[in-house]
Image 1 (tube, rainbow, N blue to C red):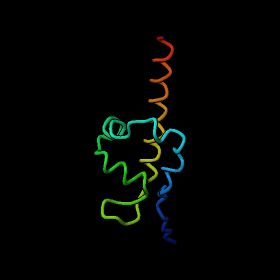
Image 2: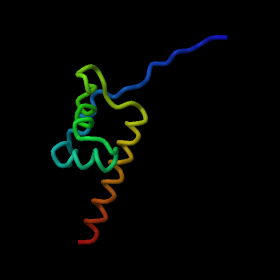
Image 3: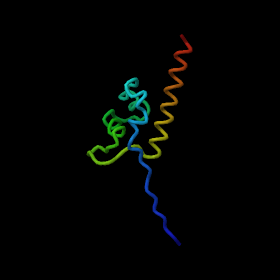
Length: 84
């Protein structure tokens, strides 16, 4: 029987991926609303570091959670625009 070790996928360049909206979103509120985490936790993730200054980033589950949160936020913005 063969044991296969897989390396977890970690996205360390998330800040680059969201560059277009980086200054338009309150990431503090976003982190609290969608992750129930502090803004410093979220900013460290965005910068690809862990809380101790080492390598870090978003794991696969957090990446999917971020994708869903951005889609939810975009839907909320669209609904607000349609109400005008």
